[in-house]
Image (cartoon, one colour):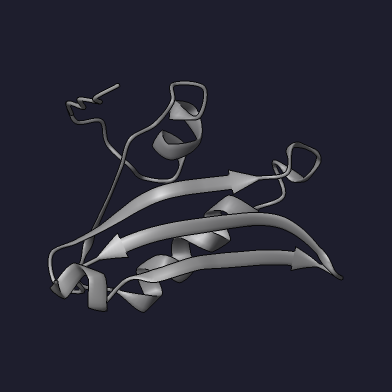
Length: 94
């Protein structure tokens, strides 16, 4: 319940009226902020939008660690931004 109360739906990066990136996170505000999605419009990649969204998230919850799962193609981005690898697991019911 604490995580639900401290969560926000999304941080949005815009250019004019266009959405060029967003970040959605869940947090308890004390231990972990889990970055659920960090997405950018492909034409806007490499301009610091993802980094700015992550920094804004950390600014909102400065005492938490940031955790996320990467799809593999973004691993280099996260490593370049100070994230370290950790092993995780996931199970989906179909």
